[in-house]
Length: 455
Image (cartoon, rainbow, N blue to C red):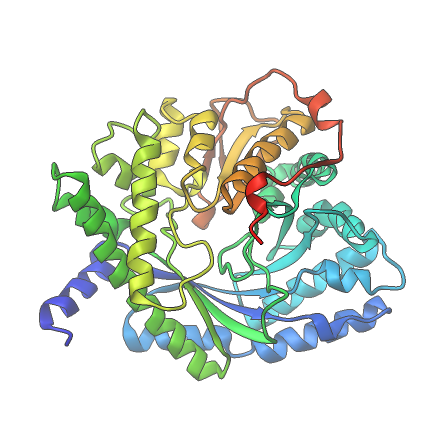
């Protein structure tokens, strides 16, 4: 039975503690949109997206109004577009960009915030279409507003495709230069993965997986502020009580997410996929993962003990979520995007949080180096080496890791880049200046670790 106290508690979470549904994401398969002719393929893509998602935004707004639960974003993810490019008779950058513009136009027609899936999975090798799609990413992201892109360069089973890693460093640099007037904004819509998951509803890494049906609804919940407020009530208590408090809070947050997901599924007549209960921060004060870690007793996020605190948080969130829903998926844990988290921004500006410390934290969080702004003159090989390090952490630990890094053109350490909205403010962080070019130029594939042999 739900008692009056629990109702009041949930209202307070929404009104005072920044609890929200961060996104309702509709996954749409483009498998039946392939065609040798790019114009016909684009027509099929546009028609399918605008048909399936025509009521997505309105449904989200109706649920928000009926239940009083804020739903911040309505998004779409599609089958990795490399699949469509592989079927084209003429596999060119120009045709890839044409597809990207079609995705952007469809997203604007139905009114969503972002569309993900301009993607390629190249962890073991690349088809001709995948190579062309990767080459087109800078032009595609700079020519569109809502399109997001991701490339998976490694898995625990396959190892790391270092040829793809090397190329992605160059692609990121080019994307930044093409959008230099906005601080390299295209790079904020591009993420490089190891062990990418297929049901992730969050951008920029969402895509509709090969193992999914024709259409699915996934929901991403958030609530760092709720967890922070809960921990304020157990200040000074042992870590067992801290973990239990986070677990119970995550349970409540996930139940709300499941309610919204099932209601959206029913109204749209689309199967319900998963609830992703990741703690996704925003630049708003009080909606910060860093502040949760500091509430555990750290003077500033990034100091010694930060990785341990994050490990406890991530684990407790997952445990609470799986008790609340049988269909917890996506990434489900704690995100640490620097520019999107008020506490992370502050810690980075003060020098308490370094790139090296963030890398250590990614060993225990849900993703990786996220929304990191570095000097614009950072070499492509250095960016590739950062990607390789993160991919290695993911590969060896059988977890998802990612890099979303912005080499801001013309910016130096200590300056900031304003992205606005949920993407926030990016302080330019220092990067180790010793080179990695000889390492990256080797190419080939780093073999899968021994723990990949689980059959």
